[in-house]
Length: 460
Ligand SMILES: *Cc1c(COP(=O)(O)O)cnc(C)c1O
Image (cartoon, rainbow, N blue to C red):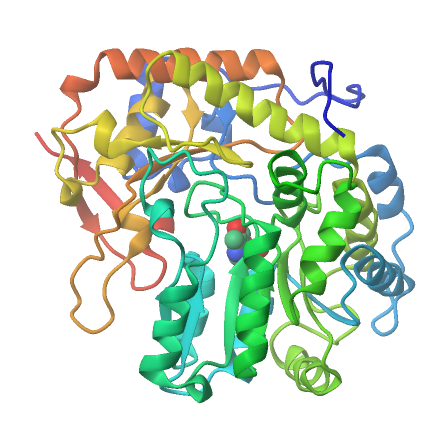
């Protein structure tokens, strides 16, 4: 499957949405109103939106046609069965429960499996995943390899789990205090870095030895499969669909934010093989999301999701998707911008510590850099650093993560190569004037997931 020709978008454009242009002066006003938090800007104030790849994909004509086939029955919608078929066929899990998005699945799973005092090891935290583990009384322990915390290590599988760290968790707390191991494909907070099949097999053997479940955060499983196909020995002749199925077969249950890989604007699910876990979860979903055959989704959303799952594992789709991300990363790398390497699958992550070495971490360098890029060009990015890392629940102090990043996340099938060029030009001009960036002061801090709604002021 090694390609010999350039990638190009495997689709043509049938409908367009005009973009909004603004002046630098206007953008400075918008930023002030938004408390220097790109999450608080209005979408209309944004030119190229690289805030997130979540729910921002362009759906295909087939998905839109599927939307018209919505069976909006309260119970037993036909679209649910299409979705269930797609999950079984492409991911291999026996049971599926729809949820409104990924965190709905995380909530239900955490409440069922985690008891107070339990410990959940994972290949780096994700914001909502860890919060649901903590709200259920658990403690997250990071067991990702050290390379993942090092932005300049070019190791190909920085999403891998360090088995010695995993062993230490079991030795310290006892296997009975570990309800499951959480394995993400690819690791968002590490910069979109994949896990290798070999590593996942080792985690499987470890889990079997101690009788521990593996829960798969499968938000970007097709992207991870592409990296295995391209870089792991023995996989170059395997299709993306085959690799995805093999990854899933090494795990027991999964939470999915279908807003990413699966090419829909809203939706998610919880999947599992164990019938008892399915029974508990399908009872709990009625409390928080909706009946187990819709879980907070309209019939039409489930149809679009069923179709999107099939499209997400197509070779040409995934090759162009990751090709576009790599193209942006390559342009920035050649211009000398400090990045997390290797370039990941869903976005390009700028290393704000090296971009702004004169700004201390508690002056929120990544947050300040995201604000500055927006002011320069109207390109919206987001912080993945100390603001996202939140506070230590016991001491109340900031968590100081190794990685202080600005994420340029690429929506699927939305922007063109020319957009990527404009983005690169803007980042380069901010880099040239980086000495004048001073950092920010937080003036409002919400209790949960503070990065979404915190407000800031520039340090004078
Ligand atoms: C987005 C995401 C989630 C949460 O999903 P939502 O649909 O946003 O609730 C969980 N894990 C990872 C890795 C994600 O990227």
